[in-house]
Image (cartoon, rainbow, N blue to C red):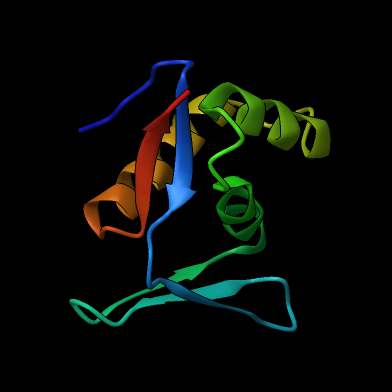
Length: 95
């Protein structure tokens, strides 16, 4: 279920392990459920922003600073966050 409220602050779920690779990509592993996801460097940056302090709008703003010409930033971030939620890698905190 996608939550798009500006008050939502995605946060890494407890127990999720991450490993940054030399090329800037990242591997996420959730031992409970044996879930593995590989993130490209942009998705890895978004993962780092899932700290419970950044709202979805703030994450989108930071991504736009890095990639000012990228179309549909919010939609791409929403799709990634939906995938991470479905695999129980992140939880949504309200703030």
